[in-house]
Image 1 (cartoon, helix red, strand yellow):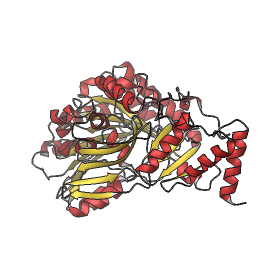
Image 2: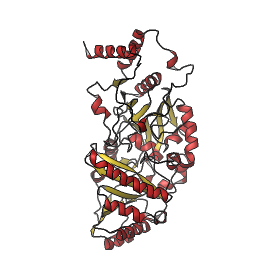
Image 3: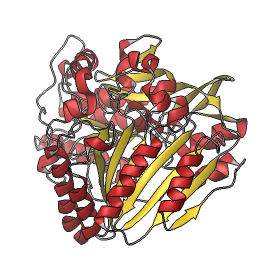
Image 4: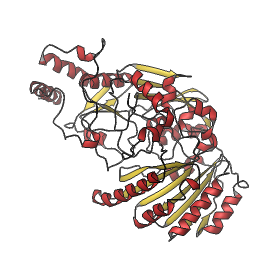
Length: 502
């Protein structure tokens, strides 16, 4: 018996047993159980109304899906399933019943219709780097976009990118032509997830968020219908910072590209064996000195245990403008590296590509701030926790610059442009058994911030424990995003634990 014949026999057995298409996989974990798994609303064009009359016809209908030229479905008994199901964060393993490896927009549409017909919740995997594993699920369908690698130059300043592309692949395509989009720095992150949640990085202050350069996109909605969004379309507004996995599956995006910086300079400062008082003092000094950075610069304060790293990068070699910053931290830190001007941008960016293989971690936004006063009353307790728990990192990055542009704010759902600082809490560990202690300490810090009134958070750095995530991520734009959800996915087919509710 061939593998395909075995598959057909297995499906028929399941249907005869009354289990429809639901395989006896692992029981969904409580946090991942969809809140809305009832039959989607029946409409005049709903595929649910067109049920075959016999088991044999239903098996044939399902089998046709497996033979589609546009998508390949994988299940747990398939050899390829293991590799396709692994996400970047090993802390949140999930097992979808079906992984739909889509080859094009039509494959995505077929997959969504299939999932709707058989009542499977759909999640979307671009790069698979979701901090909370929202790009996978338990017991549903994961639409995998990793084959969508289209790079199409529409003109010298406009590029169309498939949502399966990683940032490394995009930089490899753009930088040799002297072009760039303001994206992140981690090599393996997918452009789909990054841009839909906002997207910031080393060049965000100069050019805006990743989503601010987005001019158009193709989305397949919760009914499997293909939409083209551009200009002042409400869907495009929602997808500029309104989050991924909410309204449908985005297959590709069109971006305005920018002239890549001709130079790139990195300045690095280190301090060791810090006590709480010194770490706090240096953080306050960092806030004070970054208020007036040129838009070409990006700054970061990274506290790893009792070791502090302060980073500033400059895409225009504005050495005279940042001299007060350099002088201040040269005198305040234990080690200083004043960088040389570099002209090889691709080589420079590779420093920030990061680990590209799966690992155990718990990362999340620890708040967006307007300045040091937002956290002055609680930061000592936070620093103490970081000092006491090896593996915890507290980081603050600069936003502001063009990210705060009113023109970008007017046409995007990203709600936090008034905040010039973004913080991130990170916990890394090598073995699963090491996670509980670190994750508990992590949550203690998040509680400290929450109790101190820190409530605004970045959608791309989610935390499953945020109680009011709707307003934390989307602010006053949430109600408007709900209207978009009802228009494109009223049946809640596209779902994850913190997806927009219609």
